[in-house]
Image 1 (cartoon, one colour):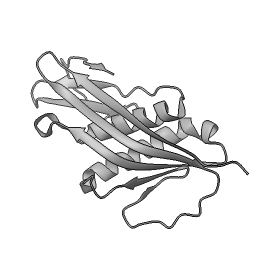
Image 2 (tube, one colour):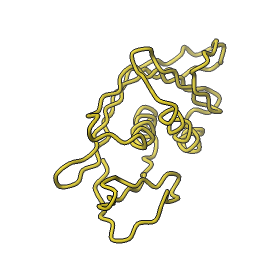
Image 3 (tube, one colour):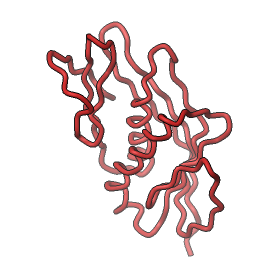
Image 4 (cartoon, helix red, strand yellow):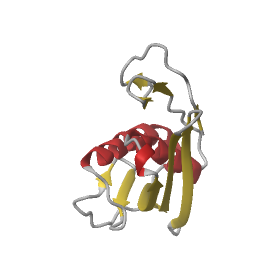
Length: 158
């Protein structure tokens, strides 16, 4: 039987416009396990192959947890082949961002980026545009626009 693979990984997601942008740094310990014999907590976010635990020092709203659920669903489609008969346990221990420039949807993007980098699998792009009227970025989750914007500028997503 193979040992579990445990590794800490940090990633940063930046969405930049000329004068301001969103920047979110996420750090987590990933554990690739071959058998799930975990006791689940009420606040664990559980997908088919990915289980997310939020450590007590990281406070998330209900809406942020929902964006994580959506991100798990999206990234599992790509990660399943690499994960194979294993499960990925993600213990989120660090989440840093500037509160003034933060949007909850960015958590979706940074989580997907974290998983794809951790597993060294194909990158998943999450298109986003900037809406001047609302002064917000509009993310296209699952390649479906959340809302259609005219005259939107396309920022760079890294």
